[in-house]
Every structure is written in structure tokens, then in C-alpha cells.
Amino acid sequence: MLALTGINGLLLMCVPRARLPAASLAFRSTTLCVLVLSVPLAARLPTIGPLIASESPLLGLAPPVWFLGVERLLLGSSTLYFMRLAHIAAAAFVAAFLVAVGSYTYLYQQFDRVILRPADAPDGLRRRRPRFLRRLDERRPALAAISHFTRATFARSPLHQSVFAAVAAAAPTTQGMGRSGGGRRPSGPAC
Image (spheres, rainbow, N blue to C red):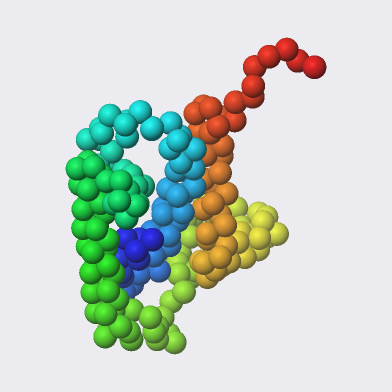
């Protein structure tokens, strides 16, 4: 979570003010989709026991295993392998902490640039729409009203944006769980 906070802080620092709402929305939506799509992978974590027992170097790329190294170190049953994983976890934690604190300290000093918007700033809804959409609006005014309301809601509401991203990620996630064995039914005679 601290790493995501740091990445968000860096994003806020690097993106021009005019693009900040769109970039923030893209980051939040992408993060939410990645987290939802990782559910099938999390369901497979118990199956990595043999890799841990064989002290596979590939697990150095898996953050949950880093903290397994920290747990083993704190419990006093640590081997050289788990000590290495604990060191990776400590380094990653310190790096994420420094990036998060540094970026948000800088952003606090730049508060008016990042957070406050002048009253005459455009809200993004007044952009000129493509010609085929304007023609569609002329033919079906009820559809145009619904379309405008939906765009305005998604443009202004982080809650609705997040719910939309979660629902958009739900279908591939359920498909992934079905393929990974998360949705498998026990085989046997039907009753």
C-alpha cells in the first residue's frame, strides 16, 4: 500500500496540472483493475510451498514471500534464504516509505498547484464532441441527455469511476478463477 501511495505521489508531481484529473483517474482505475485481476493469483499462493522448500530464487520477485522472510526472521527460525528475503522486504519498505514521504512533502509545498483549481477552469465536459455523436444527439434527445448525465457523473465522481473500473475488471477475474481452478467443482457422481 505504501508503494502505491508513493507511485501516486510521483504521478501527482510529474503530471502537468491540466492532465492531472485524467492521469489520476487512469492510475486509480488501473490499480483497482490490477488488484481485482490478482485475486486468481492470490488463490494460488498456497501452492507455492514446494518452491519455498526448494528456496527458489524466483520467489525473490514476489512481495508476499519477502514478508514471509520477515516473519521467519522474527520467529527466530530463519535460514540464509529467508534472511535474504527479509532484507529485500526491508529495502522495499524503506524505498517505498522515502518515495511516499518525499513526494507528499513536495506536494504539500505545492498544494495550490495540485489541489486547488481556479473557478474558471473547464470541467472537461464542454469539449467538442465528434460529429457522429452530435448527429446521434440530434436524432435521439433522450439518449443525448442520458449520455451527458453519465459522462458528467463519471467525470466528477471518483466513487462511480472506481465502481465502473471494478465491474469492468470483474469479468476477466471470474474467467481467470475458472481457468485457474478457483471455480472448479469436485468431480464425482452427480446426485
